[in-house]
Amino acid sequence: KNQVEQSPQSLIILEGKNCTLQCNYTVSPFSNLRWYKQDTGRGPVSLTIMTFSENTKSNGRYTATLDADTKQSSLHITASQLSDSASYICVVNPLMNYGGSQGNLIFGKGTKLSVKP
Amino acid sequence: NAGVTQTPKFRVLKTGQSMTLLCAQDMNHEYMYWYRQDPGMGLRLIHYSVGEGTTAKGEVPDGYNVSRLKKQNFLLGLESAAPSQTSVYFCASSQGDPRPQHFGDGTRLSIL
Image 1 (tube, helix red, strand yellow):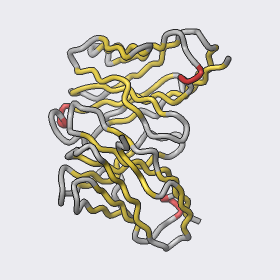
Image 2 (tube, chains in turn purple, brown; image 1 turned 30 degrees about the vertical axis):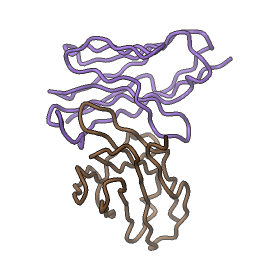
Image 3 (cartoon, each protein chain N blue to C red; image 1 turned 45 degrees about the vertical axis):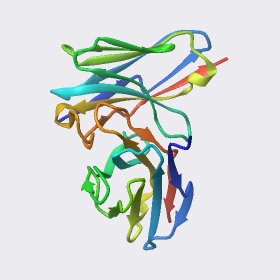
Image 4 (cartoon, each protein chain N blue to C red; image 1 turned 90 degrees about the vertical axis):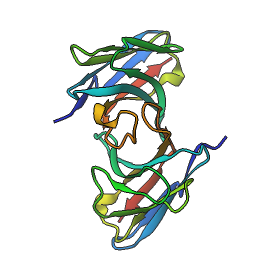
């Protein structure tokens, strides 16, 4: 069964510190892997999309890495800010969706990050 | 730049009542989706559309119907609401893989 597992479930860090969130998946083959940020009471917002052939992608202070051999991805947040407090969702797109409708995305349950002053 | 707009934002229904959730996007996207998000679970796809006049079932379609009469709108209907349908409903749109899905801010629905 295709699954996406994220760890930790929740994380508290101090403002200015770095952190890394983990995503393990069993989806194979896959087209791309995405990270979304979801603020409380809002919809998810796309941070990065990596194809199966990419190893890393950055978006400002957010850097996602992908190891397709071990089926692991991580999201690294540098110099955290209070506004980084949110849930971060890992999403894997099976290869069957390639170039098409994205009707079968596999969503993780998310990691809830709290950044404290 | 509105993006994806969902109405209403909140609603409380009684068991057995019906209602329609509206999603509108102004990005001329071909694809639109309805998800539900429940505590402790990932987003689950209810129905989606690959273009005007088309719809398809997702992972959890039972108890819901959808229509896409216009490209910019995607409606989600609950025919006879049940407490198990208490959830936060998100609409999204995209231009297809590998472009990202753009989400609205959700409709919080409680069924008593």
